[in-house]
Length: 255
Image (cartoon, rainbow, N blue to C red; front, top):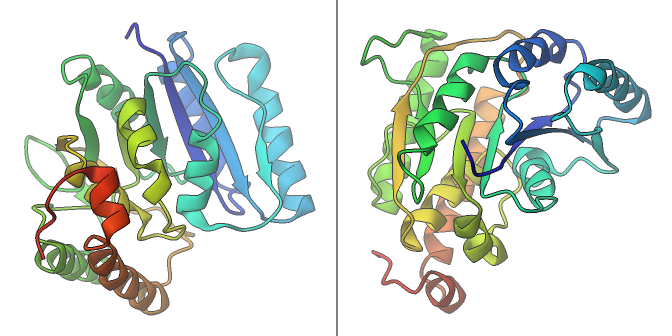
């Protein structure tokens, strides 16, 4: 693509898992000079950050598009790490993030970037849905909780979405700049807030089915994080009725 894209990989103590995924991304993306990749280590401690820095630096001599590690002093959550990376953009026309565990395959990242050529004003959200020949390998209990959460999001916020939480998303920088003052949720529910902000501000969002597989060692704890995400959804619903939200998005939000 002619427009430049910044791909952020948010990490929290991922030094034991990220190397194979970075290798796969290098294979898929290193030949595309328009793509910049930034690994953000989210306050995992000095020892962990040194491990991550060594991994990133080992790839950089053969991958000009890979930036030096961005190491955060404090743990700010997945959303906070993504936004910290996106805030470093320069003349990038697109912003994206992908989870560090490799559950979203590197070839799916390349596929989403290719799709952006035909949808220059649209945000693209990867979606874990078995259609169009795509394959999903996921623990049944996590799948069930994911479907309950997706239904909650759709009903509570009145937005049509099948999967708000898949860890691969891409959006126009102009859309992000418009909504950045309202992007406050730092944890795992930041995807929902981002979705609402994009839709309310007039940016179309298209869900793209992808191949996806469960990766052992994830940081999400089903009960604890589900409760937090539920609270965040209710807080987002309330904030959508605020004068600030409506002023930035310039729309009438459904109550």
